[in-house]
Length: 195
Image 1 (cartoon, rainbow, N blue to C red):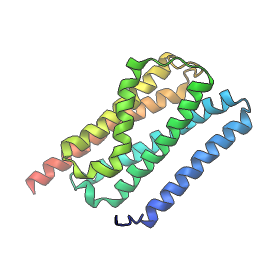
Image 2: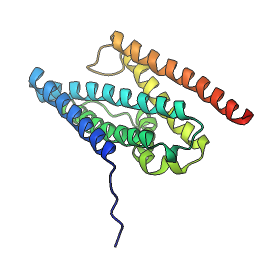
Image 3: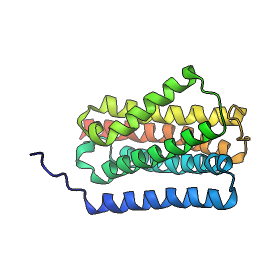
């Protein structure tokens, strides 16, 4: 018989509110745009923004506690689980948007994003068991995929999504956070060597 895995209360709350926010996103998208093609286009857009915010919170938490072991950081592990959950819901909205709007699928462009999705889904179960190098690969690779996504939006490569100032803001946030978090982690690592 397999042991029962008990979820901690803070993770339950995070997942509950994550699902509630995703439900609000799809509900508001439907109320504002009752044509399903537009409902899922907008739900995918705003769900993606929610995912981006949750990821940046997790990345900040990781950088702030670095080089403390990830396995001892329950708050970060909870954020990684929340990110995986909301990003999977985002994927469903995105897939429905692509299907309903008959958007072309370019396999070469999907490879990088597909790898990021696999990493995102596996992170709550495996990331805390990996060495720092692989943890950093996870955070910077996912950041890179997000940066590339916002660059594509700014260039107008997303059909039905016109570039606007929010894309520049998100792009700047990801680049800025990646640089600042690198600096902070390097400083913390060097301090830990000297102590």
